Length: 549
Image (cartoon, rainbow, N blue to C red):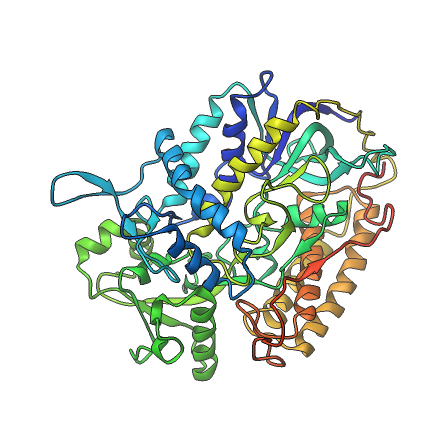
């Protein structure tokens, strides 16, 4: 018998976007435990917790909304939605004030007159100091604070170690109105699939950088929300724009440890193995150029020299400055035998952020009624062809507030709940070939890195698509015959997102922002730049979305 849960709002994901939304909704909830938050692993296991840099917002009198908007549009290489950028930037200061009221311990400094103000740092693409941070562990401070409040609110109930199988829509349940009514969810502790029924469902599942072999993201960044929304019938956009963070620590014992962009913002210099600086040859802004430019420059120099890495050096600053501004990075490096106060840090690019995603409006609404997407899983139009540093956490906060306002208003009319058909496992068996999952997982991430990475070509994309189609067939057959597991569900989502990334990349016949093609090395200036949008085909039950098994 399938366990059935009933909630007003189902939030899938427990990072900055999901937790912020839950807290925005909590005081308006009609009853205890009316808001459910599903997380794949333990709490604090998502990308938010590992974010180092900060949150961008105009708080200085020397800065302006217009400057922040202009910087964002410039970094986005002509594909940002200007209305979205203005909407986000103008709402940023009130999001910071809300976080301060919650008690997020942002770094501050004492001014000459003795007053204390938030310390603002500067990162790539920004024309002013406008990045609010908590030393070099902003994500951890933000996540801990939000979680502390959410855990103690009677309206919020957490379901850890649960992974969503698929969304449930009215169309797939035979209802007249095709709105999202819930989800099938695998309880990893029991191994059984449970149904979650809700008046509104929110995807806050983060990005898909785990589709690449090398990434700064935690293991859970498998594009679940994007894949689920696509299978449910939502459009996706701009998935060819995968941001590769230029500086991840290069060390065999350091698993995807990010060296914050703030290190370059505070004077860090990128060096070749012989100690020569090189960024000025690629961009007049040097180390403070946007991430796509810096990552491509590093990739170019590594390939040109056959070097395994380049180096980031901030040892010209005082040891006290480095230890106080970058305590987490400093301690991590020391633990690996690297003293960044005395020597350069070896770094390489790694997949970091998914700029495209599920197409939404300014309220986070997707193509399906009662289904919302916020944070990295969504495509709001803010980032365009390249996300500017520290606009990501800002987007989570601003769109959590906007979606919360819309959901609060709609809950008055979305309180009708429809029962979800039970999940049937009577025709499947336990797998005796788990090696298929692990092998396909490894193969996918390797050829995505080789063929759909920082530099692409038509031939590489075609090779990738052929391999993806073979994997899709194997995974679909496996999914249809065996009991589902966490690894299988993540692989199923990753291969779907990989296909969408490649299809978006094949449609773009130019190089722009994070998408660089050897076959089309120049930007297309013949017409107005446009976003890539993919629309699912209407194929009933193709993906077993809500089919009783």
